[in-house]
Length: 116
Length: 119
Image 1 (cartoon, one colour):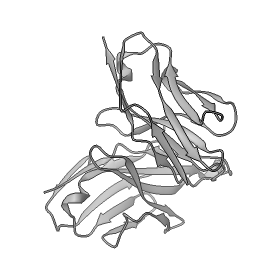
Image 2: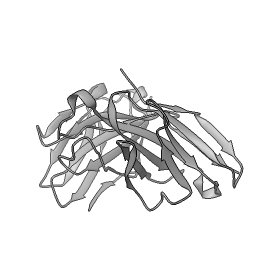
Image 3: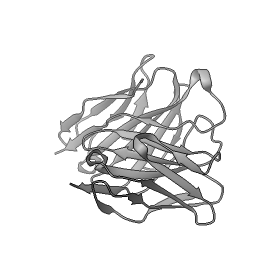
Image 4: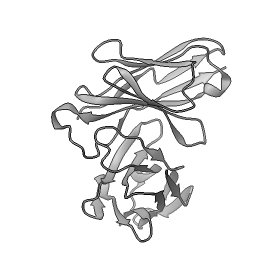
């Protein structure tokens, strides 16, 4: 069984300050992990993915995430928040080497607010 | 960049009516999915579809639901007799490019969703 926990339902940061969105996973194997972003009235856009290659993964829009097996974490970070980063972020887990088919499990989401 | 498109963006229907939600997955993808997100709740898996048949479904996907790929491009979700609790955002997704199909994880590509409101 797999699950993912997003520790904060809401995070508020000032523009230009760092962003940290926390995600912990539970899995009986070494999973694949993804972060998706959902802007208001938009679909789910892939930010980045970890699939057992480099543990530090760089994504779009300056975001990155580090896979830490010892802590079962996959936190999302960005050095400097921009107003356009305000959105909801989902941490997603999937079994490894599942080929083209994905049976993913979503976290509950973290709403990021960026204050001017 | 190719994308998954869903229509309509918002659908309002009366309880007991049938609705069809439409999706056009990315053209060279092999797997298709439906997920839903009830307001304030998690995104939940409904069903996956491969090679013209359902490959997996959740317990949510009961006899009221059906999926179909009526032609080479569309992928539809039908709810036969809608209930109030079917009100949700429904997301279509696709994965696995035909030309690059390998046993590595191919991420899901999602559409913008259809907001279904049952009154």
